[in-house]
Amino acid sequence: MIAEGEDPAREEAFGMAQRNWWRTVLGEYPTGVTIIGSFDETGAAVGMVVGTFSAVSQDPPLVGFSPARSSYTWDLVRRNGRFVANVLGHEHEGLCRAFFAAGYPERFAGGDWRRTPAGPRLGDAPVWFECIIREVHPAGDHDLVVAEVTEFGLGDHGAGMPLLFLNGGYGTFSASGQAFDAQRFIDRLRMADAVSDRVERFAGEHGVRALLATVAGDSVCVLAGSGPYAGTRMSFPFAAPVASTLAAWGAEEQYRAWLENARHLVGTVDRQGLVRVLDRVRERGYALSHGELMGAEFDRVVTDPSTSRAQLSRLWQNTHRASVRAVDREEEHRTATSIQLPVLDSSGHAVLELVVEDFDPLPDRAGFEELLAAARSTAAELHRAAVSV
Ligand SMILES: Cc1cc2nc3c(=O)[nH]c(=O)nc-3n(C[C@H](O)[C@H](O)[C@H](O)COP(=O)(O)O)c2cc1C
Image (cartoon, rainbow, N blue to C red; front, side, top):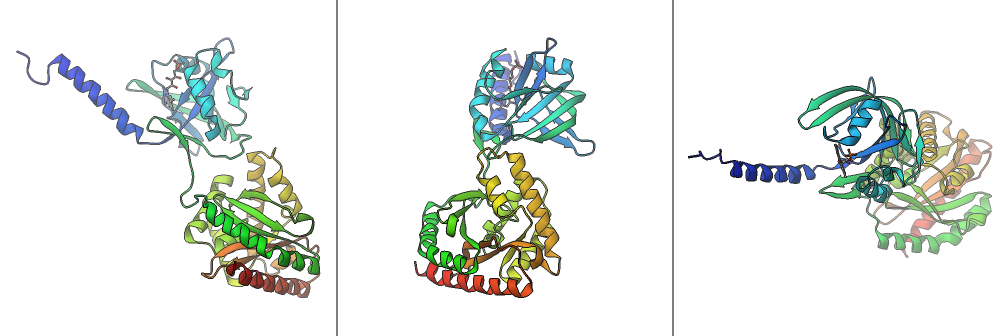
């Protein structure tokens, strides 16, 4: 007689149920999706989709992933000793599915693949790492691979959002509190339309360019402009330090999204510095931007469809650095190239941002004060008009 628990059929059934349960529970854990690309002995591209890619160490820079010991591709990657980890973006879902389903050589048929010494690199992957395998630890039916990163960077990726895998399906990331509210956007567009003639008049009287912008989801949208910019419609990331009045007089989640989006765009941000920038903005009631990068050059970069994510990231890094540096300076207005004021609603939240630019060069403190006073009274006028729409 076989004792309970030793029945092979029962054991098998239990084992199967356990495995399914393991997969179900593990499926609740979200992962990124990465293609590990390498070369076989003939120099042909090989690769596999993994959800186990992760950062391991900062100093030295190490990453890791867990390939199944039974994987044909892992055997080839291991022999080559080097690979590129291509982290996939949300628009790579089709490529990922096709890659996963295909054998060789079809796996690399789709996608903008480039050869690097370490392996094939996907040109528009949001993030990539070129690696040398340093350690392989057996771990159950998988291996645990630890590799040193020799090169890394951001790909030519537009949106920058990653492809995520959860519960057997693909999706992407969006920070909380940034859902696009279509009705709110329409209301603000209506407000901007209603006050655009006042913006035009102010710009004409002072020989400056003036724009009205608002936040919609993750983006700042320019809704109205003066003079040659009258029909201007453009959008760019709502990420610190740009459009700071919309963060300073925004709801708490809007402020958090502003910081979070910047972190996503530039990597590390100087949070303390940005808090000082916002405190200063709130204290004086307006914001200043500095440097050549604002104005026409900024517009050119954000409106050019061929702008890569790396270029956008550099632009934000520079504006971020310039803002934090300028906030501690006494004569901050001397280097200012743009003034922004909030247009508040009846509850004190900024619904629109009035941007004043092209006042070059500002003669002196008195000239600046004069322009500022005019801009303030225009913002107050816009507020009265906006709340009555
Ligand atoms: C989203 C996703 C994540 C995966 N993660 C892993 C992983 O971390 N490790 C692994 O060995 N296989 C993983 N796989 C399965 C491999 O992609 C697949 O088994 C492998 O490409 C088989 O090819 P090969 O026989 O050429 O090795 C994953 C598949 C998908 C779709």
